[in-house]
Amino acid sequence: MSAGRTPRRRVLALLGATAGVACARAGDSAAPAEPSPLDALMTLLAQRRHGVAESHQQQFLSVLKQPLDSSGLLLYEAPEHLEQRTLKPHPQSLVVDHGLVTLQLGARERTLRLADYPQLIPLIESVRATLAGDRAALERQFQLDFSGELAHWQLLLVPRDPALAAQVQRIRLRGESDAISEVEVLQAGGDRSLMRITARE
Image (tube, rainbow, N blue to C red):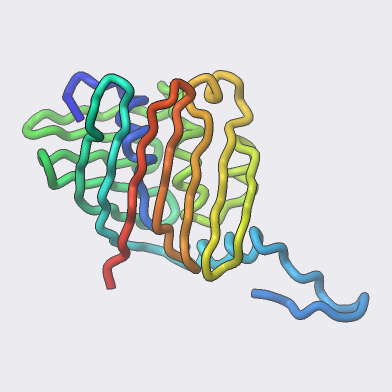
């Protein structure tokens, strides 16, 4: 990621980025309703308070013949701290914490107030709310389409806001149980990023 990229492009790279997350028995009318698979997933994700994972990201851009590869670490501390540490090809980091976004490339560091960039809030929220198991927050920004089961699941996020939809067509997350294993961001123009995530023990 070059130093000249806009904050939105850097956040899209993070989204191609992130690490990850009870069922009542069905019976008679007096029994509690069994949660939907999506609600069960959100409950499972909410129980994960922190995580560290290795990541490998590829960015497929129409202006390039070959994808851009990068790798590093992803860190999460509930409920609001997200960090992407890129180790290769060049060390850099992006940290989201309590309404601030901090970008560091070499000795250069820049901190932004997320409130000053409202167009970034849904993108950040797609990651934070998924990791936090916050379905209500997700549904304020996206239409949700869950498929699979808890052992192997997929969650598709489609932006509700037309301004965001003009930038991002969809965000697709895949995982197993409470761990997100893959995040794909498809931009409206056809460019996309794909991050594969391996949780550390």
